[in-house]
Length: 263
Image (cartoon, rainbow, N blue to C red; front, side, top):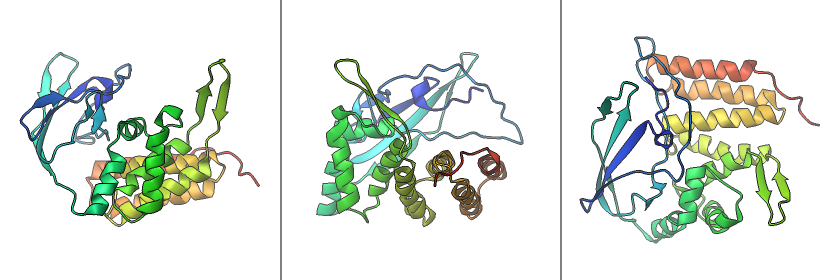
């Protein structure tokens, strides 16, 4: 089967039924062109996983109504056949208090949705969205949804960002590894206490955090993160093949050559 399960790649589509009864498809802001990679599901690897943010796309915010939603995925296989998933039902509840309302207002702008989709950006066109995330982090530290502002800021900080001015001058913001690790550490700490991200997202965050530590020259910290990742997931009673994958990821982090740490 094709291993690209993220709907941005086009091989999987997500149908959404809103509380109003309206049915539509999740459409990504941009589609990614990829050559299909094939994997075989067997007794040793009976399943594969992908973390996908589908709350915002071309249709804006897809879960902006109070009430029950239904989701169903369609996988397009190589032979042209379609494989449909079971229907997932969940309920979006109204804010419980004024703090929840304030946090919702800070999360539900179009710029914030775009930042979640991109996993962060320095773009001036998304300045208000980034300011909203900064407000979440500074004023609503203990709110459970603030974790996702840390996630977006952390992923973005660990990447290089290029800006092109009107006169075609290119400005480069180098990766800020220390800031990235600081932000992602919050996600890991809260998730380890079962108050944060789901397992798939947590795995992605810890892999990225270790990569940032390695890139900054701190191989010791990257090794500690890799070992901690294994310890966290060992407590979760995951399927054997999933645990083997995580252990293999940790081994790759530890054994990969790193840069010399700066003084």
